[in-house]
Each structure stands twice: as C-alpha cells, then as structure tokens.
Length: 314
Image (cartoon, rainbow, N blue to C red; front, side):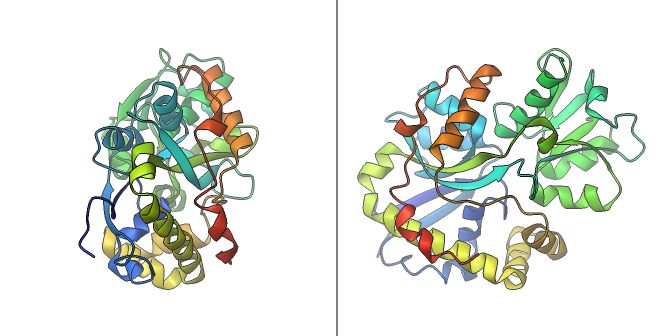
C-alpha cells in the first residue's frame, strides 16, 4: 500500500505516553497493529497544546487528534473546524478518586502551600484555552478569585516547569501524570489536585476526527480504531516492555514511564460517555471557558470504537 490520500491517516498528540495514541509512533508498537500497512498508513505528530492540534485539523494538516475538554468545547462552539469534527473515543478521565488527577506543585520551600495562596501568583500552563487551564479556572472560581485578573498565566512546556520555578518565572506548575512523577518524588509541595477542584470524575481527553476525514477515509479510520483498541490492550498487559520502548523513543526516564503506567495512571474508559461529556461542557460554559454549550450527542459517537471494546482485557 502506498499511502494514498484515502488511506493516509495523520494523528496528532500533545503529551507522550499518557496520550495513548502517541504510542502508535513507536516502531515496535506499530508491529502490533494488524491493519497498518494493509488498510491504512499513519503519520504521528506532537503538538505543544491541544488548540494547536485543533488548528492542524482545521488546516487540513491532521485527520485525528487527542484534544482536551476546553479545546474540544471551544472548537465545537466556535465552529473552528471547517466541516466540523467528532469525538470518536475517550483517552482518559480526570479527577477520579481512585486514580491520578492533575497535580499542582510549588517548590519545597515555597510560601504557596494551599490554593488560597495562589492570588497574585504566576501559574505555569502549557497553553490557555486547554483542559489544563480549566483546572486552574475551576479552583480559582471556587475560591472566589478572578481567574483572569488575580493570577498570571505563563505558557511554557510541561517539561520546563521545574526549571521555570527555579528561575522564578512561575510560582507553581500544573503537572500531567507523566510529568508529575518527578515533583512528587522530589519533595515538591502539592498545592492542590484536580480532585480538590471538581466534585466528581469527568472525561478529560478525547480522540477527535475531522468530519471530512470521517467521510473521505472512513474505511481507514475503522481499521485504525480496531488497531488502536488492540494496542491499548497490548500496552497494559506488557507494561515493562512498553515502558522501555516508550522511554527510548520519547527520550524519557524508563522508571518514570513505568511508574506512571503502573501506579499513577489516569482512569481509562475508552468509550464515549455522552452524558458525562455533556455535564463537563455545561460546566465549562458556566465557567465562561467556552462560548456556549451544545448538544454533545451531535458531536460524539461510539460508532467506531464500540465494536472493538470487548477485546480489552485490562
């Protein structure tokens, strides 16, 4: 197969490993994909933030991407993607009581030790307009602080947050699962977690596809989804091997990758729970983070993933 327009799928992600789709960029993981090379080809790319991934779909430079709550909601409400886009799978949930939630850390000797201390602080975030940003806004709003005027957001990559604290650029950083391993183990002060901000767990990250891609590359996306679910099962049943592969491919510490996958992973439920998605979209609307809520049922489907979920044994 030669990678024609109809069979070439372009998938974008932001955070390696925790965005499961990122693993499809690893050659040895690709060897586990039964349909790759026969039913489709794939190009995997990393973006700095999920709004960047939305922009890539809108520009016709990506077919599918891993996006988070606020960027998904804003893209739908603002009609950012010509032809529209649809959520076709869930990557992970946030704020589950028995699993990892985003953790906000300050330095070990910082005066910022609890959320009330955030007034006037410089907050590290990979980008505003993301689900990461929404965690800050939710907590600040709960405290009666103005999330726009009472703090300053400093945008930089997750991997630079600890350096940013040391250099005085930021006072705190919000850490996804993979990047939270180091501050947790090195004695940094946990100021709060997303469980403290949200009353219950909610779907946080979704695999979305441009509607044009769903129309033009339907067979390829169906074959990819079968592989995607199969490789999820492979990853969680071979974590030692996968940790080594991922650490080498993404130039990460193997121990950090393994600790994340085995002890501090997010809650994973890969089907689309439209009722739960509707609740978080309505909440983001109330927080002023998206222009207007919408009927999630019109912009999400289990059509592609549901036939394959019974192959999961994790």
